[in-house]
Length: 409
Image (tube, rainbow, N blue to C red; front, side, top):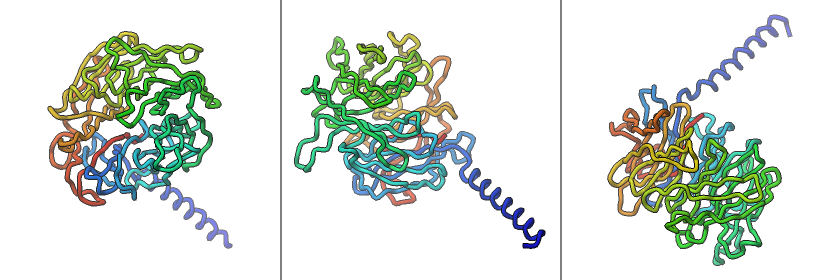
């Protein structure tokens, strides 16, 4: 090849690669919310909604796009709690026992990488936490029970999965010392520095919620089950019912929210005798997904129709510092934190007979723990919050029922 042609080709290649790189880097400037939702009428399919979450954007609070799946809505449920570094987000329809893996590296053009159902002899995955190696560790509620007419298994397991949906390793949570207990893994927290995992057991079936009052401690390095223990009952003998979401506190202890609106604190997970203590009780008996931000714990509490913030600087004695009521009917469930914009997101659980509620963003004062509604986050109808009710989505018309929500990185 003549020298000038070679040089021209090389320069063109460099320019072309640089242009493509620039295109990739500027494909989706801004900041986004990914809301995992189902069809409220249970006639359509599960879908992922992408919402503008950049406070500096003129379209802040507006829908960007949606990605519909081929799964008819049964019970759209958990996503991961925060966006992983890989940009691959796990989300499930729990009753379908099916998990989707979304590629969200380009928020304007979300893609489905794959989906899976039963894995490694387990079924009905519930929650997903990232490990230091980037893989997901998922809780599966039941060991595979064979024919569909057989009852659900009373034990389940943990399964490590990569971003392609491939099983890396798995372990049963069956414990011969707790043969009469309902050991259905619900959620978990990973403690790499201690080589530990703490998981909770709580059933997704309401008739079983009074049976699941245990937590389990595992060794992270080999998924060996080290300990099964009961939660502290407390004086009212209810607040410990249905332990769900474990969260790592600033002091290294583990807080666990319960459906019965208790707050359990687990200490000594790196010892032979971990201990649980009921340290706080919220109003009501239906509390959802909490979020810890610094030394504040933000809790959704159905009885208050909003959120309660506790100061957990003294983890043995949490103190309420603020609460925010969203409406007279709002039933809050999922919460999540965005470190980029310093905002909390909340979605509601749908109550029969009640209208589909909105998704809201709130600001958390780091000095006082006060929650205030972000009134600049507005949908195209001009109202505060994002509406899922009876709208024209890119994939079709209807009402959406959101559950898990995460912010882009």
